[in-house]
Length: 124
Image (cartoon, rainbow, N blue to C red; front, side, top):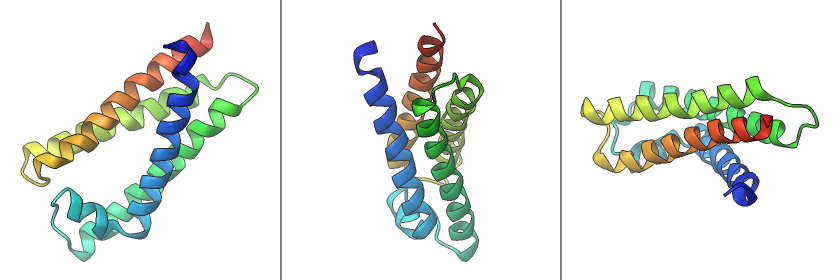
């Protein structure tokens, strides 16, 4: 697993950046996929969330390629992913998003756990 850990974290980080950019530029695309209500307000806030997704994905890439340990940055990237899992999960439970959004939530859960594992392995 450790042999593939860096490439997995890099792929997750790039996917986070790209999906964040899509969400920032075209929030309606993401809202359509998860069957959320498309309003000017929801689009605006989804674009803001996309901006922060882009920032956290870039932060994780920066941490991976940094010569010095970046434990706090990696921790907060993991927390962003776990928080996204919780937020999307609550959105599904509350009927804001369709069950298809569980794919997004599970990706974030998986990513957060991988980031926490990466943080532990990298510090050893």
